[in-house]
Length: 274
Image (tube, rainbow, N blue to C red; front, top):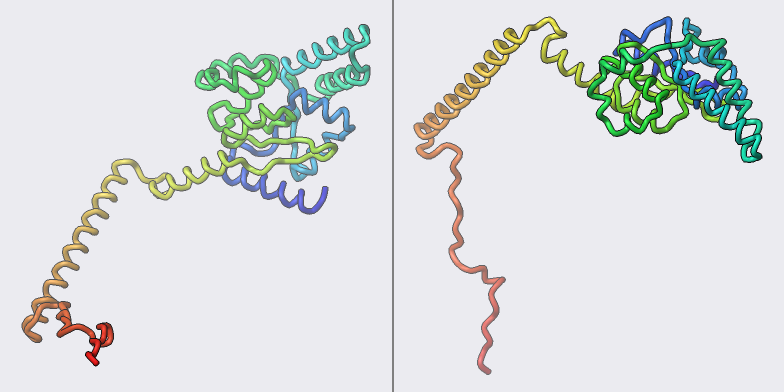
């Protein structure tokens, strides 16, 4: 791995360790069909690459049953197209190899219905309705609890699914740039969610202050501000009074100079009668 990519990966993992404690070793990586096909086509040694990016921590690869079914269906469609002369034989081989890798090297998640039922708000989203069954299961698993409560890393080449997951906090994404495995930087949703948590911690003294105690603190601060304003007003009045007694005038009042007449240089000269 190049030095720049390794440094970026370390920073990304450090961000998730500090702000999302549930994303910890042993890591769980959820693979989708597009990623498996791309890895098979480019002959990427996934176990070796994942190990390097994750700093040689323990990890397990997962695949959903719907993803395996989708790969099997695509392979069958390619085989039928091959018989009619409308399809390339190599594509069918890639689908078969990708499915076999999922069966041999990954833990299989059989049922995602329980997770989907807990995400009722997500089901109504338009992007969710446009997903395939495999993408829908992956999205539900990765967004459980609103902030990836099941702590999955998602590996996908699907742009629609990736964009939807970037809108949710704390969903790390893997993708392939040809034969290079990349761990994306934390999304803007993750950074914004972290910023809001930090602001809440500051307001609640690190989570040790109750709402009633917070109200008392706000009331005390408000009273202090009011007292400071009153003190400043009293000091200003004392200074004005002392100025009137010593100088005999109004405090900070300057007399305006009035013009005694027009400026002779700005006036037109009178024409002499010759």
